[in-house]
Image (cartoon, rainbow, N blue to C red):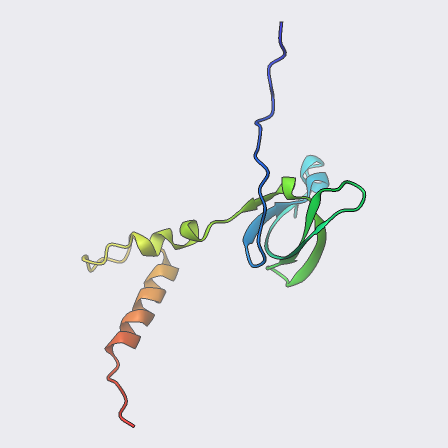
Length: 122
C-alpha cells in the first residue's frame, strides 16, 4: 500500500532582479506569530555555499528593509498582470466607476487629464 502524498510538487522557480514577491518567514508562520508574511522586491540572487541552492536578497517594501538569504521555497511571484487586472478590465464605456478599485480610477483620471492637455507651443 502506498502512502498518500501530502505535499504538492512544485517546479523550481527563478526570480529576476526587480520582481515583486510575497515572502513568508516559516518559523514565525508555524509558531502562529504575527508578521510572518511580507511583500518584497528581488535585489539579487546568489548560490548558498552550504546547500548549493539559490537564495535571494529582498527589499521588504513596507519599510525598505533588506532581507538577506531568503529561501525561494517561501517566495511566490506577484505577477504584474494581477496588479493591473482592475485597470485592464475597467468598464471604460460606462460612467459608473464604483466597480473599479480607487487606484484604477485615480490612474485613469490621471491619464485622461494628461491626454486632454493641449500641446505646448515652443
